[in-house]
Length: 123
Image 1 (tube, rainbow, N blue to C red):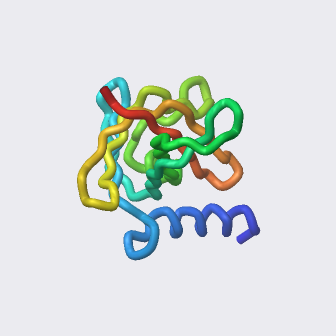
Image 2: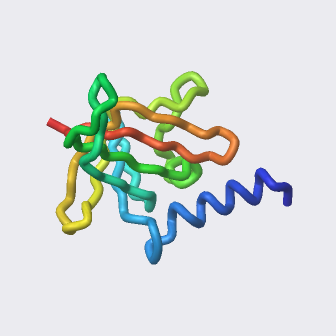
Image 3: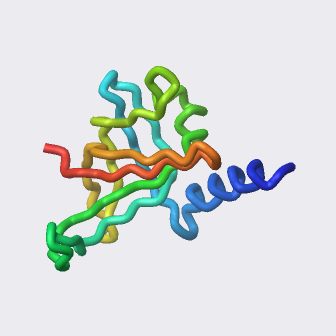
């Protein structure tokens, strides 16, 4: 096994470990496909304004191994490119309350198969 294959396995293990960083996530595609996977969820309230000054601003994200989504037949790509815009994500925060988000931006690492998604409030 080469280093890239090992890195893919490592990222799958890190993001799916419920004992350490992983949390249960439910994704729903615009076409109603649903996947239940384990990934990393973060939510904090420190952002920066246009001048670079710190502000109280909610920032939420998830990191998911694409392979876990593909294993469930979940649509991650359009025309061969990762596209998760407007997919819905449900995740519990540190209080145990389930939050519902919409994916605003996504940043795939197609070397190791990790997709980081920036989330917005679902309204």
